[in-house]
Figure 1 (spheres, rainbow, N blue to C red):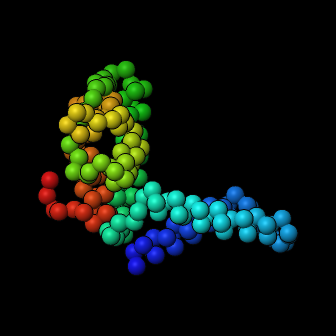
Figure 2 (cartoon, rainbow, N blue to C red):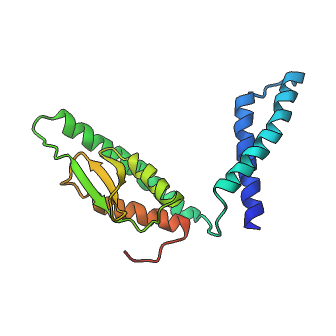
Length: 169
């Protein structure tokens, strides 16, 4: 059942994207009908490729944790943005740029990629790769800030969203 649900959700998402490109407006014209009809096999092909390249997993998204993660990312983005702007515009406040390695609990794959993308949105940090031990490497505007602690909170929330949090670090 998870496979069918995932296929349906992905197919609808791809067809929705097609609808955005087709720009369906009233009145219905033959050109619009042709565009809508062409979207069905395009969405089906995209869904097939998506399922082959990234098969669905048995996990379920926890929406309460997702709300907490989104709230944290939005609020931290505002707070961090103001802090970075203040630090870069004030000659008295010093920045100490550098690199930080973060030993993530997420295995290589889509979950880790999502974590990197989300944390890369935070002003002042940018994931730049992994080291030989598999830890994520971040470039930070100020390594004296509690970046690792913030990353740990974000990672825990993402693990909760994915239903993979074991409750300890």
